[in-house]
Length: 356
Ligand code: GLA
Image (cartoon, rainbow, N blue to C red; front, side):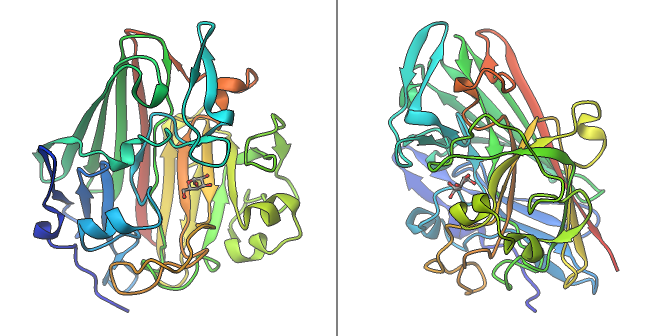
């Protein structure tokens, strides 16, 4: 197995009209480091020591900024906004006014539509060797959304091997918001086999089944005794092959879990994932009500990652903490309204450990 190193900073310096992109490396006392780029306020690599003390890169990505621009996958480990996941027909109402985002995923708007945050160069501020912030202003009407939205995404790497992502946003008008991070993880090491051997636990009693275009039907379906039941640790590979219409239609998992975290929020993990190969375990903490579990069903093997290996279908998983998909159109879902003048505040943490 490779002993990974972060990509070169020079490879991430590129001029986009009047803005330049960069690579920023955070580090902690425990030998972990995380590379970030202001292009999409994204994660480029996460180096974690494995059970043998070797550094393993558990995040998919590329060695050069140009490969991000050429990739078939637009959302590689990026900050996703203004509205992560799908809005049916790209249409929603705020205060009785109807807004329309141009569809970019069949008939739906996905991940903020065509002008999503993943392709923007954000302003950056490096606070110290373990904390950096990215800043973006999205003008009123951009991509069709109401309100001038100011967003700050802060990444910090603690000495407990926790990558904390804190989101703050402010709008001058009533609007909708759903921000997430789209890191593709493989705890075997990026590009190293599928994620079928990963053992996953999710603290959710139900999930949101979807229709033929991946819009939630509104039902909250119990996970118990179905392929979606990760109430105790189970290999992803055992569940993904089960005879389940939802999994077959999506080509794997691509569903939002209704998290049980309302009472404990950031105090307990909502998900735990372990690779028996490396002994690397990741816990997810969030204050968001939902989490999209996505198994890289659209990764096609056409893109080659940092260590020269193709990124294959089911070669990674994402745990995208967020509001429920299509929440603006589904009154029974928790509200994703951000009132003009209010501040949206949210946090998600990915914590790494070694289990021997
Ligand atoms: C999310 C969606 C998927 C896919 C990816 C990006 O996880 O739910 O359907 O669009 O983003 O490729």
